[in-house]
Image 1: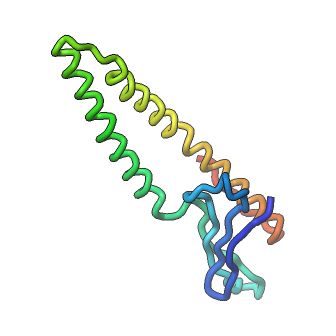
Image 2: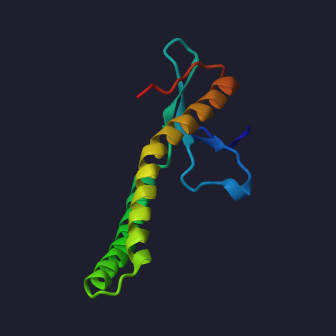
Length: 135
């Protein structure tokens, strides 16, 4: 896999290149600086991970879905109390909650994998040994 990004005197920002169809706006990228090492060599110092705004985006999406699922669930409960059972109105929020929990469980594992793959690519290019610490 190839990398795509910008390298300049002030900033290095790269991410793994993917086909346009599968690009993720919250993809894992490396952002850092090129510095001179005390021994005269070169250091590339930075962070690897999703964009800093990723938690804000995920929180916003979660809140919107919480409002939608909550209103559908309240509608389903009111139909149940009134004697007009609408099963989809009760099952939709429950199904959404299950999917959301699965995403919360699988998301960090997928992020660690993405970060390590990007580090592997950078290590090949820079002939370095950076690793993502096991959590």
